[in-house]
Length: 125
Image (cartoon, rainbow, N blue to C red; front, side, top):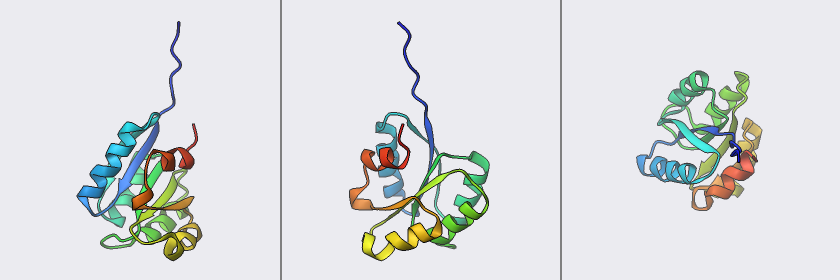
């Protein structure tokens, strides 16, 4: 019997808090078909990392040192990246969901609600 190979979606995690990057990495590692290929702490680092690694999905925090996550999202989209960007924040969706979509993100998820289902919704297999 041959085993089907599941396409692996490449993920970059962008968050200035190491604890959340670790938690997000755990979620990605436990989700079939996803792998973390990079982590960034600033918006500027995110731009460089997305350009060099060409990920399928970027998990982008709103509050970052330097340029914030919404501006980084705008710049990644403007650069023509095929990466889908999911904005994450401790703030509520009512505060940032529309701004995230306006910046070019595919959606917004509260960090409290982030889990495997958010990955599946962002990049269905």
